[in-house]
Length: 137
Image (cartoon, rainbow, N blue to C red; front, side):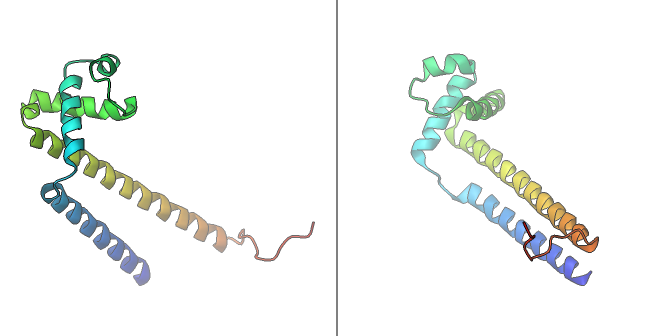
């Protein structure tokens, strides 16, 4: 019981530390200038046009539509709050979106691993665990 609490506390502290590090990087990391300019330019087109029209307006776009749906949603939010007028504000919004997805995926992964570990422990306790010796053919 104490070991489980220690593991949970350690994992929680690591996740919190990673989150804080990412928040610091959101504000201090300059990012890739070319990508930032490209995403900002795409956002300008996506804020006022559909994704179907986007590829004819921006012929050098090399991302798949799934990624562009996220950019389109962010572009419309930024446009509504006057965020598209400043490239840095839009880039900050993109970074926060990525951070949010990272946190959600980390929590989901932790939950699945923990659930799988519990299932394995329950199986072993009930005697259904596979033996390490091979079965005769």
